[in-house]
Image 1: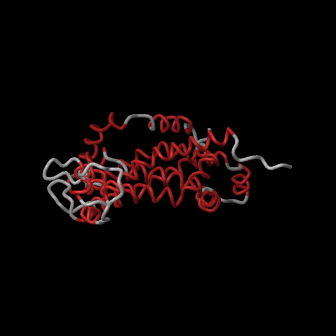
Image 2: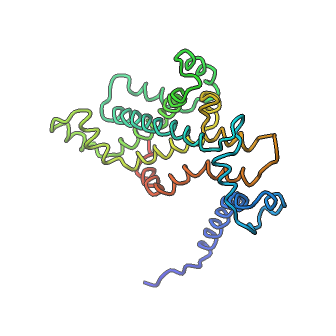
Image 3: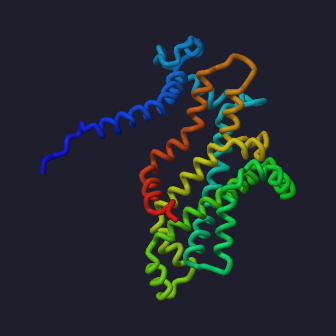
Length: 287
């Protein structure tokens, strides 16, 4: 059988399109990176596309350690640790509860389970802005307003509908004979979940974690409203640095701060990207 030629009109069109799309999305990243490695005079010279003449990491150190984020000049490091304190428990709790919800909705149907699922599904389409004022009142009554615990609770609750949908659809795609065989052997709810379902569901757990980590880490709205001045996450502090109206506009520090803020989601995607694709392809978005 003769090998198919690579340079066919179809391949040329596809790879040319992919190349231009990649350049389009990577070019802003290039501008941010080269600007963050320039000193202030060079950054303000106007040629944002030129490589730095003298590479310096001072903007990165300043963005992390001493940039002013409002009344305090402690850099992004405080916001980084606040974001970690918000993201880690929110992801763990929301993914765990949603996985149990999805497992129960597929394998342990109860009276009204479909209504419960419809309500959860409906909740995933309600705009966050509609519920901001009621949430402020609820957290105030719970004595959790302007606390990290309040932000964790909000992210956990709002991540539940879409994650439950993902887990329900994934568990529904698994062979039902496995569940039936386990039931015949006398396994109960928790034993089946932890010994059978969880080991077979690593891809969808990675998908859920990536979605939650990205959504929570990049969140600005909940952080600026519910966290309080002492608990601002990294995104809120980035906004305060970039939009500061006092002093000289330090574009190199702004670019470095922007890259630092986005490093965690980028690292998560690069490390677990193949699992994300596997989870989606294996049933994460199947009905």
